[in-house]
Length: 70
Image (cartoon, rainbow, N blue to C red):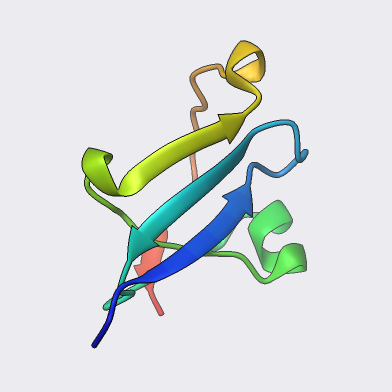
């Protein structure tokens, strides 16, 4: 399967990014924000990730929720 370019953002939209990779497996978060938005998560290698905008808005995010395979 060929690699694809995916563009995304954080929940508030201030941070935008691009990932070049084939999606093989995603995880579903059970927090209220992700559940409302239908967000799925997937981990990528650093070399597949490009920050497009919002570096000044980056902070460390802690969640008390668990991720479950989709």
